[in-house]
Length: 134
Image (cartoon, rainbow, N blue to C red; front, side, top):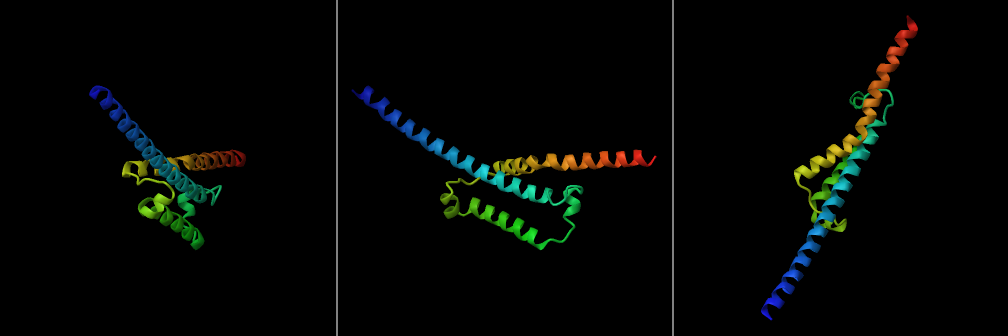
């Protein structure tokens, strides 16, 4: 009888641990996806400011509204990931530095292709213009 009861108890505890582990993974994944989307959308805003110039050159232009939007979005993201009442409301878990770094790289990497396109397109356009003038 004792042998029969013990495995059943262990099975129940293991099932509970697996459910807890799964919900923890879901909340981390949810927080990572949200962070990646916010960073990616901010990158998209910055990249789309100019179709000819690289983003680093465009940042020199004064645009207070842009910085209010970027600052507000980053502040809300920071609060959502650090304040327990907010991250519980969104069913998030706090992220480690490695996870946060991965989200930032994924978000910015998702729009980096457009920056590369602008650089290569500009170089190609300059080459074509030089060929036409000769």
